[in-house]
Image (cartoon, rainbow, N blue to C red):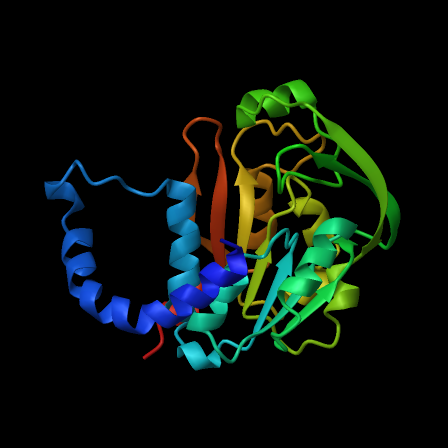
Amino acid sequence: MTESLKQHMWNWIRPFHSPITRALRRKLGRNYSNHPEMELPPPYESVQLDVERHLHDYLHVSPDAISMIVIVGAHEADEINRLHRLYPQARFLCFEPNPATYERLVKKFQNLGQVTLRKLALGEKSGTAQFHELDMPGNGSLLKPDLEHWATVTQWKEKKMTTFDVVISTLDQEAAKLPAIDLLWMDVQGAEGMVLAGATETLKRTRAIFIEVALTESPYKGAALFPEISARLHADNFVCVGLGTDPRNGTGNAFFVRDFEKLICKR
């Protein structure tokens, strides 16, 4: 069954399925402490689900007020359909430098007018650079990986890597006409610091950031670690309100909200 067919099937089933199971899910979901047999989602996945479902709560707005989401390192962009259901007024600006992946995205979202795709990598400055694509889907990066270290961290047996040239722009250039960004979603395999370095002005108009992080040495050479990312964002008045990591390797996801203290102190 194709992903498209699965999506259509769930779109049809969900209106009937959700009301029937909602009460049971809520009851069970609030009793994890009394039911140790219930498996929790991994911490990094919990943070992502929290962002997807409660972004509007963190920003203290209604779901319909979420209007612009920027995704850097889109890969298959599976999150778009989920976010679109929850935030129907949102438009999406997505960046993906891998030509083959980009073409799949074009076909995948050809009927969703809210999605704009750009075949670009984002970094500190415009130009061209080599992109390193690994055998594990979604692990490509502008930063060259140490294959042995990467295989250990990911527990992936294949150590194949291909490289190709990509065009690089900056978020400041690409988002210059956007008045505001509700959520900047970033998954660029260690190159997060490079993207932020090219987004100085954009960050001033960004309300929240969901970003992949590493707590310890990254297999991607030159990658910025979580303390550096957090300090950089803290300087722009972002507060880390969510962090979930993989206990096996110290990688995971973090969620930052700008001016969070002001939001929670609203009367």
